[in-house]
Amino acid sequence: MLIKKSVILGMAFLLSACGYHLRGALELPAGLKNVYLEGGSGQLQEQFNSAMKTSSVGIASSPETAGMIVRIFNEDNQRRVLSLSSTGTANDFELEYRFDYELVDSKNKVLMPRQSVEIKREYYNDQVAVIAKGNEEIVIRNEMYQQAVRSIVNRARVALAASPK
Image (tube, rainbow, N blue to C red; front, side, top):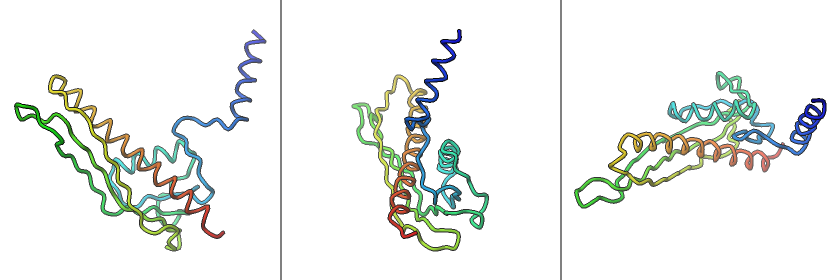
């Protein structure tokens, strides 16, 4: 029993020493430690807040208390048919999600000028499993919002590393 506890404790120390992070946790620079998201849909805000909490980042309740503000503009979701079956039913769909954003500090100084994010996904619409395909679209959209948040964070990381201190 003592050996098992020692092995588990040793593994915990090794994992923490090697830089292991929980899946979904993002490595963020110091400038991103207190963030406010201005604008954006409820789904984007939900994914953003979830990613920030997972990464132990403070989410500011107002722009005045934030170290950095992410401003979202022109958010748009599209769904279009890519192909039709011989009976005229949609076989394939393309989902498109796009928006513009900029990063500013609490004094309204632009840290990163306006950038665009565009994410596209295609999926097959199986007419036999209609309910499952409806759920698949929801899952795909959530993944698109997660990818959008990762894109914002990655670009912010680069912008903050390049900006003079």
